Length: 238
Image (cartoon, rainbow, N blue to C red; front, side, top):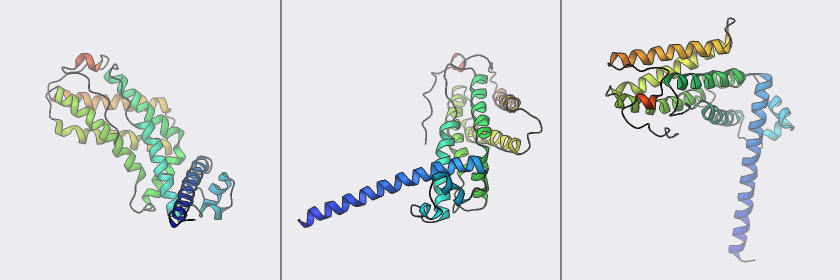
């Protein structure tokens, strides 16, 4: 066997091992998500291993330590949340439809995955991700999508686009913090009722902002019919 052939074989084995390790890491993370849903935010590594059908020591063959496992869970959860909660875009919708659809998606996801949200929040607050805050990352991604949308329409109506980012982050924070508190203490408020209240509050904020600039939008008329410029394409995901 030539040295070059031996090197190729070694590289091939390394690539196969790396691929197998990545696959097993993904499998363990999916098992961890199921274990979190069942056992709550205080899930243990033993419970994750049980869900994966292995002993605890097998988990750490594929992760450096507990922090590495937690960071990888956070990364996967952030991907899932972002996919579901990125503001939904429908240029044929009315302002109220766009708001209610996005709010319903956000509150619905958090209500369905309350234990995962609590897990991310708890461990982020504990600093176990070496400064990484998965919940903040998700909120930032959604808010930046909204910023692009607001910038377009503020510019369309010849209003000050500098407020777009602050407005977007404020609205995302309103929905997220209100829903997080509702998860812990719903006080007999149904999820649909919460979504309706948040939709109403968001419209009041947006309507007040536009009226202050001399613009009045009809909440139940398509934005495309009220805009003086073409409807933009969907914002690009970051």
